[in-house]
Length: 417
Image 1 (cartoon, one colour):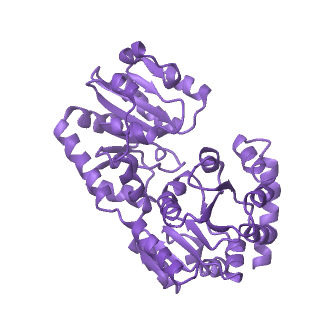
Image 2: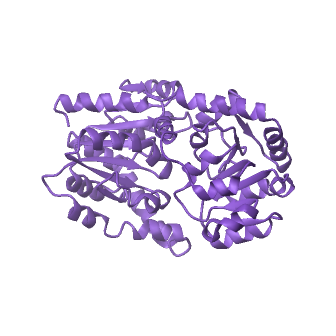
Image 3: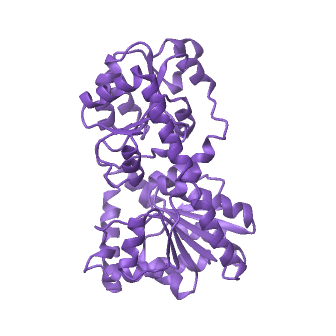
């Protein structure tokens, strides 16, 4: 079965190589892997101590970050090697100061896995949430390198829990310890004989809870917001923006909008801007005079959204109106902000939980968006109450990082890393 998997991996490489001619994202995906092993070899010396983190993309990076920071603080003698699968993670975080080496993960072939693990020679490998690459896992197991999964999340539909998933179950069982987000994930793992599992929760709660203690001030947003009710629409896709547009155009003069698209595409931003009947302003063209006059502020840059949420009275978080995947709702929740999202969020347990607590609202049409937004805008008590529930939800679910760091400390004390 492993041979078949490797053959299919090589075949998929051919399709990926062809796809780069049709997709900018795939160009980055392939180009970033051309000299990756050579680059790592230049950055890691044979006598370096290293710990390897693998994240699929940006969301998993945010989950892994509290652990990376904990290791950097407690064990500064270790170099952190951080790999990404997706360009949407690597291209944004390739200069992250938390890691000593940031790169793409070479495709999961036997040869790549052997070379990568030999060059990095990690004392410990940490995988975040999901993405299980069998050849890498088998190589770690062969060399007796301990591995952990943190903030793990499993679903019954995954191949591990199907009759045909024998090979993937075998790969999964090479992981030394699983720290999962919820009881459902724990039960699924135990159902296939994996007992080395503990419910720790989601490290993202620790990550976002730290944000409220940071300096989140952005003076130009103080000027823009003034005394208005501010709705922050974060990580929006075109399908989100199309649904929001009627409400934006029909809302009263006491409401202002900050819109931070997920992808900064000048052409798409300009196309959306032309449909807005209110006065709008781009981050790149701001000045004190037009900040006061504008009703819609469009953030055509990256890296500010977490701080921007501190200015929100209401947050709309994108990704769930289409099929791209709901973005991080915990970032606005930590500031005590009620949240509105799209309709496709059943795979996101934190969204389901917040909805059950009446701190999050789902909408599938422009009419439904307008109904809930108007209620939140006009009823300050309702807005405040739902926001408090969201903030409390974050505060009451922190602690995953401490549980995981305690385990790493025990590995270190026992001389296993």
